[in-house]
Amino acid sequence: MTFRPDDRVYVDESKVRGYYVVATASAISDVRASERALRDLLKPGQRRLHFKSESDSRRRQILSRMCALDVRVSVWLVRQRSDKEARPLSLAALTEDAVLGGVAKLVIERDASLERADRRLIAETIRRVGPAEMQYLHVAPHEHPLLWVSDAVAWCYSNGGDWVRRVEALVGPRVTRMEKHVSLARHTVRKTARLRGLLPAVLPVYSAHGRAKAEPASLRGTTKPPEGSGGFML
Image 1 (cartoon, rainbow, N blue to C red):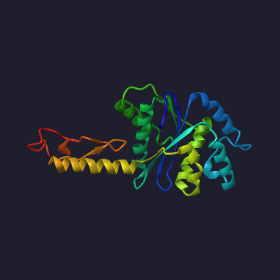
Image 2 (image 1 turned 180 degrees about the vertical axis):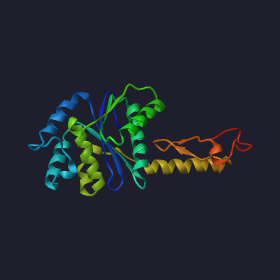
Image 3 (image 1 turned 90 degrees about the vertical axis):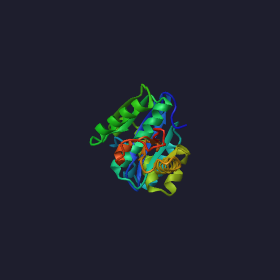
């Protein structure tokens, strides 16, 4: 299970060799102890851990300590798409899982250039998925140490190799490759459309998880469903 009821979830990303959105989930009862353990890793003068700025030996030390925390980490990966496409695709998928899982609070590392779009996307996803009391906010990374776990895992996945192995205890099977969801949905909707004689009248649109949704045939220059379709549109 990606998230559990009343979880606190901390989100960061990496844009190197793909787009990785990473969420670290913790029960509220465990947050304080985890934050204290992470702050103990700071060197004099450090306000936060920033994984790309650490040496390899220190990265290994930090990961060893992080793997001992009572947290669950999930990764959403998008490849071969621009950042402008990849972020909303992965963030919407994460938000949908958070709402369905009953998450209490979503904490996202602040990027002022993206904050407005993020908030609009999250609000729209909550309205689409269903009623939820989930709070969401953007914060500076030094304010919430569990963001440092997401930062570290995002760095490890973008760099690959042994670094991915070192965070397996945190991530486990919770990796979603978004392009596979979109590719599968595209194949399924086109196969169904061919069977019902609806192509090329229907152009599918995909939700955050790649689920096909209806788009008016008028966008393809057709103002009504083909004869014999019974008015059914995918």
